[in-house]
Image (cartoon, rainbow, N blue to C red; front, side, top):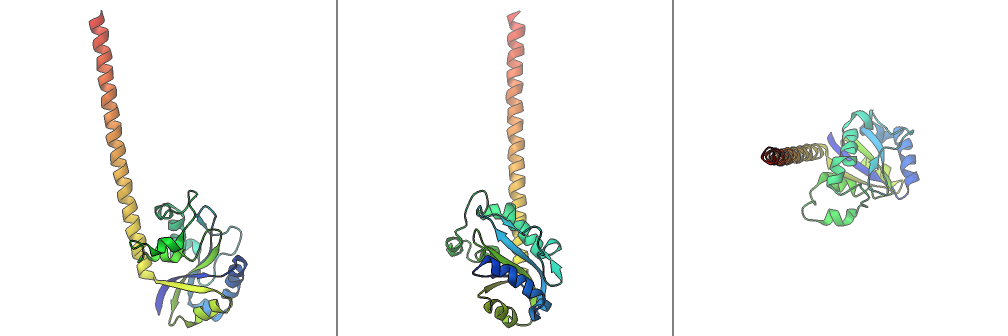
Length: 198
């Protein structure tokens, strides 16, 4: 068995909902560890639609790697990639940049452009044929990345985000220290003027 994170995209948003429903009763369901139907808003942010049954297979988005992945890409990690905050995704352009070509996270996201949705799956499969056939029969396409690559990249991004936060905290402390020093000098000058003025 090989473990992957897969994004399955379809030409129409409605087809994605239908595919999720059909996935549950299909032969492919036994290979699906966790799943989520993920939508990207016009501003680039990712979400799992509310009120719907978001999962198929043994697990749903909340307690799995898929939940972690969606949360990371929808939060600070997504902002690092330039998603959200009003930025529309130029996935094809970004995917061609040399410094991001090997990014598992970026390549997974290219199948979910702004205003569209896709199934994000954690799969454990002997062979890719069953999921590929399931997607192809509905006009979809599948992009897989090894689970370990996705985990390693999430860990590296988390470390980078923590290092950036630590650097920002250090800078803020230095700034506050400088401000206190300036205020102290002003206080001393005011006191000198008051005492020398009497």
